[in-house]
Image (cartoon, rainbow, N blue to C red; front, side, top):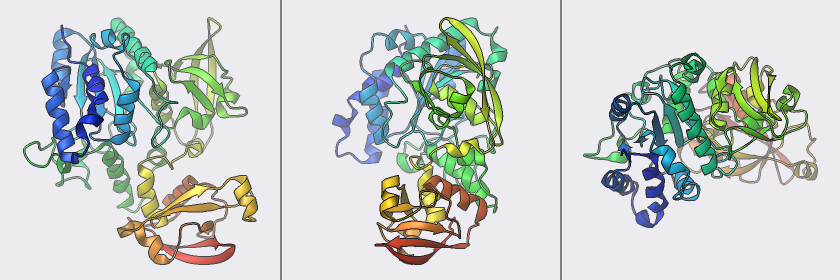
Length: 443
């Protein structure tokens, strides 16, 4: 029986912290490879072998993209996966492949939120995507987004779709996106000639590895270096359902746990207890699948057909997304936000102030009040420090604007209205006294 499965990933990493304490990044990666290859639970970093085996056996494929040694992924592995009696028999029905770098990755097929460092694809051997699993909406917490029960539901859903394939080929077509700007990460200009299409295990593994977030960085750099704004779809990637007021149960495929009053989800008619079956005709296996459909929707607005099961019956709803709907998302938790802080804020990390904090600082509630939580100390991230900005300052104006109420708002304004080499004036309050500083807009 084929036991090359994702369980090796989970069980192996539940023991990882004890094994790698004191190790360098290089040692951690090499230890990971040595351990999991020796255990023989799953195919390691070899997609070609995985697809060949799937074609030979007729099984579907599970592909896990997992950064080594991402601390947050270790937490996810430790906490999420045990010797689960539901997961193991499900995984044994798949050909399972573990990918630890994105070098040479086919970006026409493997499209995902590159601010994540853990992503699961469930596919047919011909490249048809059945579904995705794995997301988070916080830099370190994942409990509201993923669970073992949710993974089991996604795997069962993929097996059901596989059983019905290829009769259901048409409804799965939308689960694969259009080709990106380049076919694989190392072909992007900012990565070209720095990386090859595979990891160099003979020499320096870490330095030869293209991490997930570097794909997003390379895409943004492609536009920034040409003097163009980063497209809104790339700037606000993979919108989380919670930005629409839709809270989904991570223990299920996509059952509605809560709907915020007067939100877009509320206006669409979604209610607590609804089981989302399809969006835009696509079967939904997880929260990540919902994000995929949202990511394909136009930033200019769209109407998405939603089918839910309610009280045992199917009901059709329409989720209307107005213009600028993506901007309701929070960028501050994302890895990409550090790049935006360098580009537009000279390395500042800002915190949205509460109503009480604004009131105490005598700042109107409908005007900007962003607390400087951190000031970068090195390189381009120290530009604000060199300009004179200090931790604890409150930004009340940016380039003449006083209505940028969140850090994400400020990022997006900088993206649309400034270019590399520009300078902007910022106005701050320091212990109640107004001050003015000049920040460079950087690459």
